[in-house]
Length: 195
Image (cartoon, rainbow, N blue to C red; front, side, top):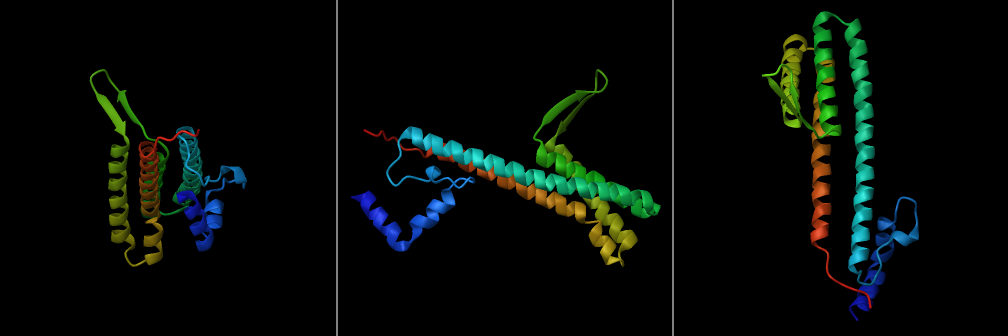
């Protein structure tokens, strides 16, 4: 009775077609839509796995797109650094280093420990790279305002590493939020067996 009412409500309100198109896979196949009857545990698990896989592949596409933009801008900063006066070249090199830090923290989640000599341990984490990036961004802002405060186009161009830092931070937060929501879906499964 409840499933009939749900079908009638969906047809009357027009949600059925938009829901089916929203849930369709990227290939456009009809078989990947959500059924109108209650799903058993295996079907729920399969749906969650498909959602997690689609989410992971889209996140990788977004990270790759931002990484390509970052590599292009890094190359541009290095090319410009070789042809500019020393004060501008320093800012361009600092911007290059900041964009590399943003790209590394976006693409990789790591925690490594290196022993330079036997008694010194040097530990690299994403948090430390982010701190270094903050220092670079503050230094870029300070030097660009001090040396090029009246040339607004140059000042805004030197803030491009800050834009990449903000985009990479927002993307990391978005990716982690989506991963947490997918893990919460596993806890929300209900027990149901088809007869």
